[in-house]
Image (cartoon, rainbow, N blue to C red; front, side, top):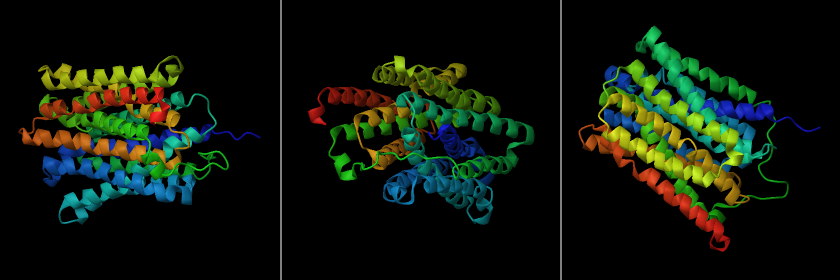
Length: 397
């Protein structure tokens, strides 16, 4: 009897919702942390850096233990850490003499869960017996965006009704999703990533491939292009565009996430009719345009529109690079997905940190920080062109 993997795919969809909670709930509270705990903007930037930095280390470490303990146990561990971090976020700031260290420890714990999910979810779906992996991968990654939308919308409504001072109750509510999905992963079937008798490429074997390094560059640029705006969208709306928090969160982070998810869902629906490389190049150019809109257009509404357009433009970058990697590097196995996730998290960490550092050097001018991030979509285009050239000459790989 053929095993039904629909529930596995659905659990993976929710897994990306969990990662969206981990990455996008706390940025809504940046200014609240600044006022409640007296934490500077530069220290708040460190929370972003630390989150993705820990995820990066987990990506690297997972190469050594995921295959040993298995994907099921790793998935359960990931969800448990994500839930624990969100719960401790409500407790630790008051436990430490300096609230910043309490926040940092909680971020570290949920970042471990987020890092594991980034490594695990894509290969679990890749292993499921489904047709057209590129479409499935893009649809999967769209659920990160829908999770992002849900986090912003429901959190904003909660803050509006019950007040931002009660944010801890919202954090506890969000922790229920990883708890329940972790339980679901104890039951769903999980297919092996490689065929029986096959072994995945080692890190040394991957490092010898030119195409692997280009894919790593692309993943770095995908993460940086996305998070450079996503992590700062709420603060940008309030401080740079002078929009109140409720409207700013809805028009900034939520519009970004909706359009990013729409881009991924669109490719998930029509991907078999679209040239992936061309679609990714056009998207990178649109990303450049969105950065210029944010930086130079003085009208707040158009600046916020730039944030939304950025979400549309970066949607295909991350899942598209994963799909190109799966098609280009056979027998990549856990090592390939883990290292790509590592590169993506380097981008997710360096993008917003780079924006924050440039902004801080220019008197907290976030617009100029976003402009400086233009380098990331530019290098994305360069990477896509290099991949296309390497595919034409496989001997050079």
